[in-house]
Image 1 (cartoon, rainbow, N blue to C red):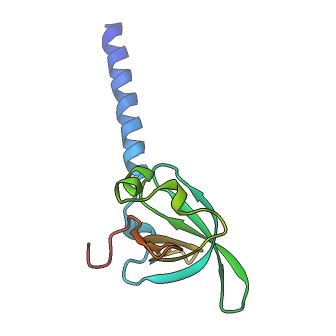
Image 2: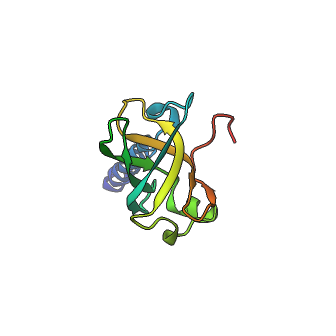
Length: 133
């Protein structure tokens, strides 16, 4: 009888862990406006190759000339690597141009679709384009 209760407890714990992990990942449209894109050009301050999404931080001058640090969400590091990215592609103090979807909450965040690197290459960053490509 105790074995049944122990198995039921383990099963309940496994289901709750899996459910929380599944709900932690979100749809792109929950956080970003995929009906429009923005393009930012700025200086890289940091790149974090973390799961489930990599993050690029870029200082961008606004219309008033003030520098704002933008957080740019990418696909997973593994996804970026499969698309041709390498950790050496985005060193701090380099200028990049990023296109992506703006945050719905109007914060300084975008979900990147592509990034133009200082050497002229453009790499796909992970978010699907508005046409679904």
